[in-house]
Amino acid sequence: MKLYDFKMAPNPRRVRMFLAEKGLSYADVGIEVINVDIAKGETFGREFLKINPYGGLPALELEDGEIISESMAISRYFEELYPNPPLMGKDPKSKALIEMWNRRIELGLYNSIALSFQHGNPMWKAVVNQVSEFSEVSAENSDKEFYKLDKRLAQTEYVAGDEFSVADITALCAIDFAKVIKRRIDEEKHPHLARWYKLVSARPSASV
Image 1 (spheres, helix red, strand yellow):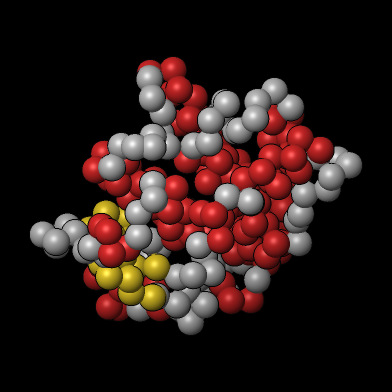
Image 2: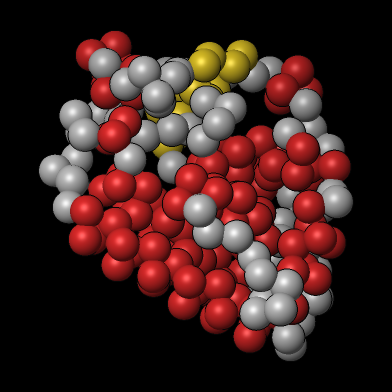
């Protein structure tokens, strides 16, 4: 298998963390890593668009030539192959809660950060019809999402409940990604989020 990756991007990191939490190395699952430099525009180059016409990372090329893109789809693939430890739930309730919170983080926090970055950073000028005001509004929306997560984490140890899950991976990668729009956790404003962040950042998978 081939995994198209970029070390600095949050979505490929989600897959790396997922595999690390499973205790799997690339050698264990037979993965060859191919770096595709987003900063140099390589994801929108002719060759990569043959692999993923949507121009996104990561992308997993299976041995039969099939391509799976999107972090959650790739994670689901490995969850089915290597179910333990479960990162997407053990029973109907936990699976539904993890799916719900992961989706909320993707659509809310992560999307707000990504849109602010795309509309405010010069590296995206060739790809996005940038609107600076939209960058500012999206950054403000990300602030609101920080508060929502803080409120949730006042009730639970991890995002989706009492156990670490893929929702925590998505949240951690989104929050670290927020550095690009100069958004960070404020321990006074987000005490519960700060507690959670220290907890999950200490996991070995966070350093991959």
